[in-house]
Length: 540
Image 1 (spheres, rainbow, N blue to C red):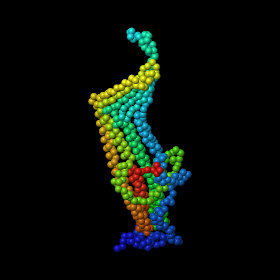
Image 2: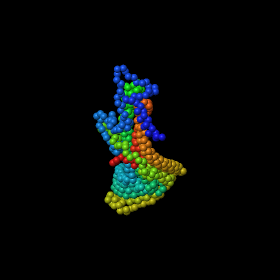
Image 3: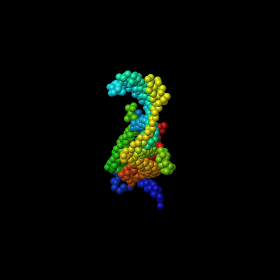
Image 4: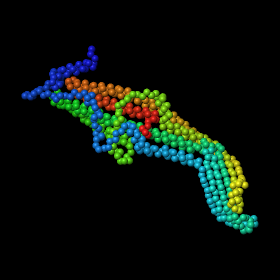
């Protein structure tokens, strides 16, 4: 028994042998009237029918022009790397978001400036008069000129120190002669320090704002980097969608050419009366459908160009919408599934993904907030120490010398204690901070699970796309063979126009599916780097 493929060839050969010149059946055909010749007229021969195979029609799609490439628009030919580079530099959303880390950096400077030393000073003039009260308290008129200058600073331990120099000049007159000196000078050096021992003491509490600002900066930088990668993957998708739209237009043109060729053959067979006039309607309707699809395919190219322009360029020069984008990165190439273990890829993603880095920074902020809230539950206990040295003389030099020489020192040490009764607010703030910390940790854990799932999914999608490409290539080959066979069957009178149109549509669908699978593979290549957190623009 002959194989099916050989039987088909023999059958086609027998059908061809049964036809006469011009493809007219020699025997009677069921349901078709015999061809009649007009008197005094030579037998009418049909024009030679081109037996172009589907493979011949689809031989060189690169020669099919794209309508949007015409006109006087400036042409921008770009590879995928060019698109990523342009988008990283010119995307307006990224330019706006890039200011967020800079703002957070200024917040760090603000918090750090809290520990900068402060120089202060004051000056005053007072004129006062007091009435006599008794023999020992005569009337006094004083004119006082005083001031102070000093330095104070908050330390990371929570301590606040203050160094002060205070000069003073007093001129006075009294109703009792000789009771008070007419002019007197004083000078005082003072030092004071307050160190919290419990609440508000040491670095955990006083550096909290600075550490929160630093963690917020890390989080902001990581979230901006994730925004960059989100934009880059959008550019990748927009770029390959533009490639798909352009190639799909060429596939649609080829399907239209094939439909027109079939219409030409039908018209030729109607001319030689092998087919009835009504048989032309089927092919004309198919041509009309292909023309409508071609219009939609051309519009899809323009839409995809706009999407890529919007992601990749700004309009600072006013030429954004006038550029004709022509992608040059080839679809064809290596379509092999990556030999990468998902565990290794997940470990790298968990370490490098910017969104996970940002969430870890959020956890760090929550930990700092909890540490500070836990310390605020403690009572207030401050150690206060002071030291002064002053001098009082009838001239300023002597008074300053006594103060500088520590002729009359004073010092003191004190403990100050306070605690709210019940301390309810501090305890509630601590519990709230504990809940916030647990919430941040759970969000991080959930995100890590999502990252692992995304890595596994990306690897599977890439493997599936590679296998789908091999299968769709075989589908295209079989669809081409089926179309050739059905056209040959129609030529020998054993097929129908409807079947040819069906095979033409199946070939179009197969070629579009192959193109879609190839685009999906290219996008999934970039998506695998995206889910690993390593998608970057060249030279960025």
